[in-house]
Amino acid sequence: MIDLRGTISKLVRAFSNRENQLKLKAYEQKSAEFNAFQDSILQLQKLFTYKLNTPLEDVNSIKDNLKQLKEKTETLTDHRNSKKDQYDKYVEECNKSRELRGITMKILSQQVGTEKVDCETQIQDAKEKGMKDEEELKLSHE
Image 1: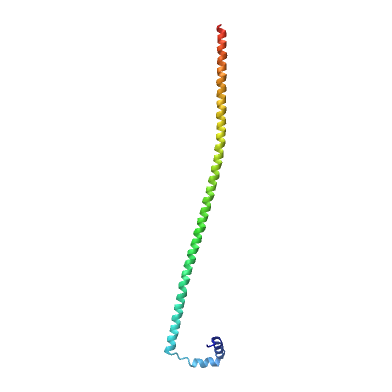
Image 2: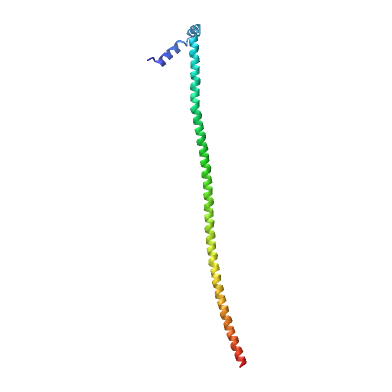
């Protein structure tokens, strides 16, 4: 096998002289075969560039899709968190209102109890007063 690095370095050293460069230019006649070879190299370079660009485009589209998905998940998690906070606040308000309803129910039941007691005492007092008045009327008639 040919040692490419060694051969290339020897050629570079050999043609670094100005004399050798001028000698090389003297043989600069291009043949049709050499032109066809250069054209095929250019076509290979274009093909190589095209083949490299296609996967790059795919990679870029995948990265764009991933970026969009990340943005969507971030917005959805933010939306979920805000809804969860709203729900927690609602539950807290419901618990507070339940406590307030319980307190007002106790107060109202106590008021109803005191009203009943007051009503019964007033009825009892009225009966007693009626009995006294009746006895006074009986005494005054006798």
